[in-house]
Length: 231
Image (cartoon, rainbow, N blue to C red; front, side, top):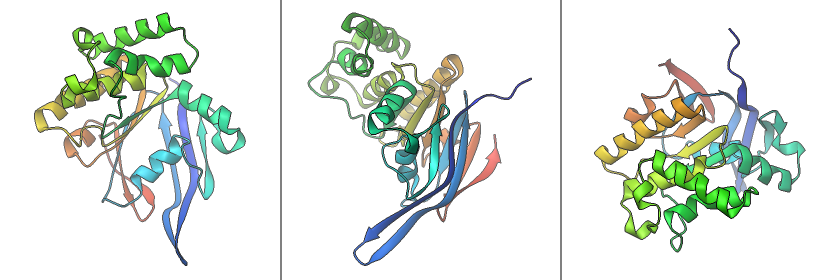
């Protein structure tokens, strides 16, 4: 039986920031691969560089050294326009704060990435409605973020991340701002979406309950990742 395809690979990542006359090394030769359909949790102390890593994996920043390859394409070898297209087609982002546009309905927020990706307004709205129904918000699709609970807003954010049918979701503390019961409902939804859609998830989290649901758990220490257990 063939092994799952590699969706994303990072090799030898270094990231150095300047603070006045000093330099701070955040990542030190970090390497990582993500297989199709995999749930991968990244844990570690605050300030260890986990969010910086997600920005590099998503092509939002360029590393000081090393490479990130998404669906076989090296981010550093393509133009900014091509990087944007790769992100839109193959990566969805979910953050601790939902970052929904407050003036738009849930439906419009979810449809927007599909329209940016070239889908017609009609098709994008249908795609948004289908996903909102899937995450349990079909009846709330015309509500604005201010009219939704915290858990509902995160469900909208998940639907928005998935609307372009990406190969990979990068999630930064996706339930860190929610109460326990609401967080656990989102955890279950992430597992269900991963298993039914086959979308890979890389999740930065401080929550052991969410990390326990991953196929692999990696801990970030001194700018590198170490696998601490196979789950």
